[in-house]
Amino acid sequence: MTDILPRHPDLGTEASPALLPAGLRDLLPPDAESEALGVEALMSVFASHGYERVKPPLLEFEDSLLSGSGAAVAEQTFRLMDPDTHRMMGLRPDMTPQVARIAATRLVNSPRPLRLSYTGACVQLHGGSLSSDRQVSQAGIELIGLDSPEADAEMVAVGAEALAVLGVPRVSFDLTLPPLAPALIEEAGLPLADRAPLLRALDRKDAADVTRYGGRLAQILTDLLLSAGPAARALDVLRAASLSPAARALTDRLEATVAAIEARAPGLRLTVDPIEFRGWRYHTGICVTVYSAGRHEELGRGGRYLSGGNEPACGLTLRTEALLRAAPARAARPRLLLPWQADADVARRLRAEGFATVASLSPVADDAGEARRLGCTHLLRDGAAALL
Image (cartoon, rainbow, N blue to C red; front, side, top):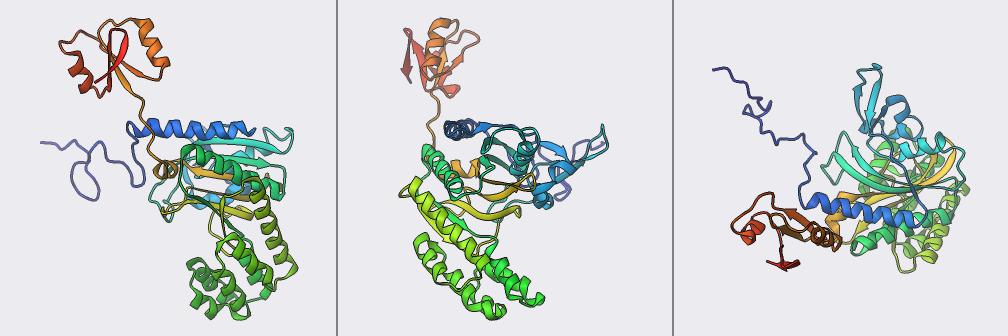
């Protein structure tokens, strides 16, 4: 007999129709609705601060998707051929470069600073270091056309408000200076053979290897490495450090940004890691990573970059799946069974009250049993919702 069913290439057995590529998954009830409600809560906060929503396409031609700041995400981009034009296209791995393109082209004549928000799915070639997900949902904001500590502070303050609406507990914002360590290494003229292992040591927080490869920078880099933590302590170390004028300008900006955040969002937990440099490579200044205490995954990240090649911008992108894992479970919408031929006006009223009405499409002998079978919490009795 001819075998017509597909076989899994690794296991040599018939593949399940539910089998998905690694890093991709179905989102089922009630999680899919919970995510949608959470995303709309985030977008409502963004809109209340004047951020207008844009919706870039999932696919773009490769030469536009990977131009400007998009060049930094090339290694995470799925590519495919457009059958109509025979040009290469890419699936976006991150939405910020797309928003930067929109600002520099379609909205080039709009007043600055330009405040834009967005949400959507992205696909990455590889999951992040702390996640195996390759399809990730993003919701974020971009403030384009202004370079100031107050603009940086707005990103953090609006993000903190959005997380508070979701109920994410014990949020902290970790501020970093990705240009600082490379600038110090370049200015010191360290041998090229030592630079890559030194950067790896800094990335791993390996003080012993920092001493081994750091040369005359070893002491200052070790001090900065060990200063990571509460913002006040890290800033004290940075003030005491012997830095070049260019490096001092970076740390002064960091201090001004911390002060601006504390003025706008008093009590927000801020940490500083001055030599952390991981993240999207298009960031050019102060960056931020969002965490919830007790959880190991990032909830979001953002920072300062150049939009359209030379226009100052900053943004914050939140990972909605991670947020909803950190936030308290949202109460599911109560489901109510409408018996066969129930009054339509009553059904509309109940939906307005927040019920999801599930209509019986034929008479049944036991409405209460049918309601339980369909996962309903309530049943319509005498024109009112009765709890089962």
